[in-house]
Image (cartoon, rainbow, N blue to C red; front, side, top):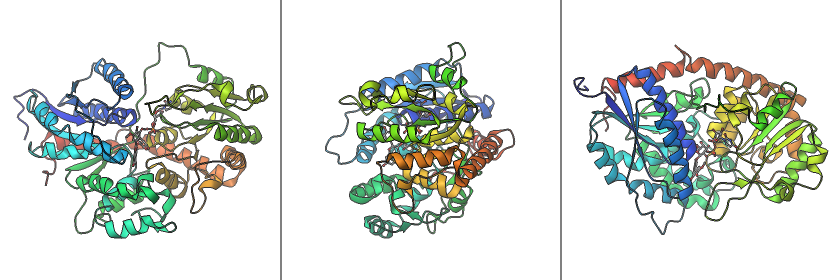
Length: 483
Ligand SMILES: COc1cc(-c2[o+]c3cc(O)cc([O-])c3cc2O[C@@H]2O[C@H](CO)[C@H](O)[C@H](O)[C@H]2O)cc(OC)c1O
Ligand SMILES: O=c1ccn([C@@H]2O[C@H](COP(=O)(O)OP(=O)(O)O)[C@@H](O)[C@H]2O)c(=O)[nH]1
């Protein structure tokens, strides 16, 4: 039980430095604060990001959120020396995170408020050990899909089976709650020549079992099958998985009231309802010049209105795309030929405002989970173009389980090609914008999931109920004790 005579108990959050993870977790924390009705505060322990650019991004999030007036404290952890001699980003991330363990212990020991729970990002589970000594409930925040969680939970127990399967070039993998998943839809780090990263990923999955619960940015309505499979113990044989608290969609909106509308929004204001296809590929997405040519030709031939966020390759030492030089990247005459019916935006775009706009009728997306949830929140059907991470699995789920997306030919059946030809983009865009029965069905399904998402987080909805139960569990000190 938490001692009420002391300061409000605090939930300690340990987010990953990637913006999509960091902001998703802070937004979830705000919901937890709100649901606690003042019984809890939030302490965010901020690891210094491994690059200066990422550290600056995190810093700007922290400054903005710290000024929000909510009961959130941000504490910077001391910097650590980045590991060397790693072979994969997953290994780097694991080791870099783990190096923060003593700093986390020290920071938590120094807090003046009692600690009600510790919540770590899905890629920071090495830090669950640091929390073990404190005998408080410890949770994982999972900023991706239930399907990806089901797969990660399966990795340790099915090591032999799965590694053998993943080394093959054809076949399917059983992700409980999903139809059989063709191998090319496995997260990139688990397939082909990257299989050596299996053990790092397996370790993340194994550590999930040490948590008192897993808080996921999803909802029963979006992923009933996989969430039931996890709850029924179909992922880890002989041992129930921790309770999964599906509190999503968690989406964060920036306040822009004081600013004039963005150029993209002003352009959309001049377009007819549901007439524009939006193309945007997340915080990391860019394509090379050859691929740009195919996209341009595909859009020209499809004949629909479009808003295309086109970014340039990252500068040396960075993984973030740069603003694109449109004249250098686009085929000659493209902008003139498509004037009036297309806008190519070379920089960061206000994606949520774009998806919320009535003129937008479809979204060609890299299937990052935040982008996907934003699309569903506004009822916009998608064409998946997965790029990295778990996005191929997300794409499979959107097409096969949710029915809200129209696949490109390059993603049909058992193969996923990353290079997309003009003809297949043209065909998919035509379908998405209502030219095929498949596209019309995807639009209807997306409208249905829009309603379901909003119902889930409204008072009395499934995600709202899960959030309140979670917060009540944490504030009464009654979460399942860590094993
Ligand atoms: C966006 O920037 C980064 C993303 C990742 C990243 O890496 C990754 C690696 C894997 O082997 C498997 C993954 O599943 C995976 C996922 C992943 O993150 C993305 O997170 C987003 C939330 O911000 C979103 O949910 C996307 O769908 C995920 O793909 C790693 C990274 O650096 C370490 C990034 O900069
Ligand atoms: O031009 C852009 C590109 C991305 N985003 C936002 O950045 C996040 C991307 O997160 P996601 O999980 O989809 O992909 P990631 O960038 O992590 O791969 C989402 O909230 C998008 O709305 C945006 O606002 N403008």
